[in-house]
Image 1 (tube, one colour):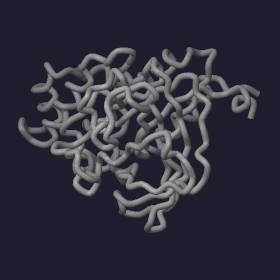
Image 2 (tube, rainbow, N blue to C red):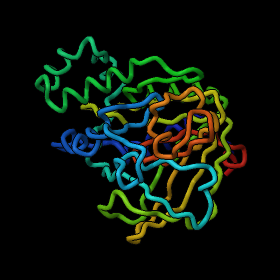
Image 3 (tube, one colour):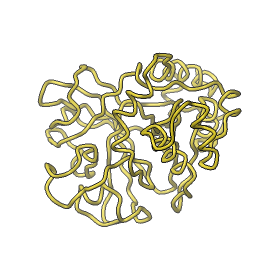
Length: 293
């Protein structure tokens, strides 16, 4: 029996509620402590990166930039340094109901009102993070990109549905999962098995952004992308089922994109791949064989 968008949405809702829902006190502060440093700059492809990156060896680079690799690296036995932020679901702000989210302004022009609403002082880390998020959501997409900042689960699903084909084209979300919990964020990981390609004629990537409630920067690019599920083993025994995306055409990317510095290449010179942290989502169409399961 096929899986409808409505059925898929129910499944995804349960997935996201487990991943994102939280009513705990102090969640916003803990999220900031994990994300603020890397969010000080956000590039046109939606990936947070930090100031001060150089062309020197990996040990001199900000660990948070160590998520990039090349298509040639995607093979069993390959070892590479990778940064995986450890953000527990209890530290993630929750989605607001659609009606409530739509009742709250979401623009940089309304920032003073928003700071009053959430009781943050101007110049505080929270205020700076909110300002950066709002400005990032307001930036123009690069050529061939469609983007939206989803302020509710319904808004996210509407955007994904519009990209992946509407009610007649069911879709699903995939994400990175850590099979062994540890506090290690940055270490060497080895690809343990042949990476599994995920059939996807189109895809939508959704990245979390720091805000008092859940905000996802979702985008899709016309250029060709490939999606993989990769089993990784950490040098400390960690095991990760990671989602990775390879962008085959980077010619329209900003020359200052951190991937070019990490990999030592120029825009458009070669495909750029990167891993997704556990609280990000990649949406792909459900293949017919999957829909019959």
